Length: 315
Image (cartoon, rainbow, N blue to C red; front, side, top):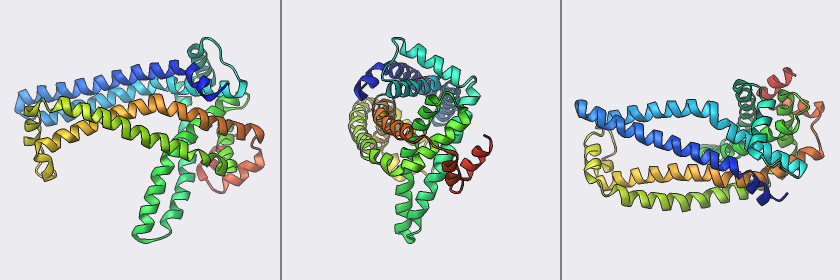
């Protein structure tokens, strides 16, 4: 199957994630607005009420995501892996994806334990690379280190998903061992896999410019019809807030920008990122299947990552 075919066949997960994310945005907006007006009527502190509503919404969304959204992401990765390694997918892609996720991870806690271990290993490897930039010294070194760190965090996200795909592929192995193998695959084939950087960052930057521009612009046109709201918000800003925020036009631009970024993050993570992931995952899986990691490979990575060594000891 081609990358486009895999993306199209697993699109059902994309749509379900989109619906879930839209519900989360409505919760965030609804509870934030409700908090603003309730507290504003009680003691003219609408901004505090807005903050309370947003915090409450974030907590509620985090709980819902913990127990529901992981199935959309993990199920899609499981089906992408199946398509890449077996060359075909069943008719009921969503049902099969859910079944594989539940079969591999009997509990939600087991899933997050494995994904937490994956992130810990790759983040530790990433920090070692970041230190190389910081070793230049001075402001230049810090700037290089920060840039590398930001880039690595993006790459780590894709590597974690690829490693999770390997865990699904190695269904004959315990999840812990498959996780170790997945980390070794990157360690042994890092240079080849990093060729995906252009695809990862190119698509990310392009989608950011396009969608933040579109949704930020539309949001500004809508928000500019409610000047009284931003006059009220500006009047309730804390004394130490930047002076330029007291200008309602600037405040409206900030609000529109935030909305634009929220919409971009949803569209990119739901539509663009899975398409990029198919290509990255294919390269990762092919590298792993050509040379499945061995115990000797584990020993090499033990020296470079204490988190990996700790997980290795659990085998």
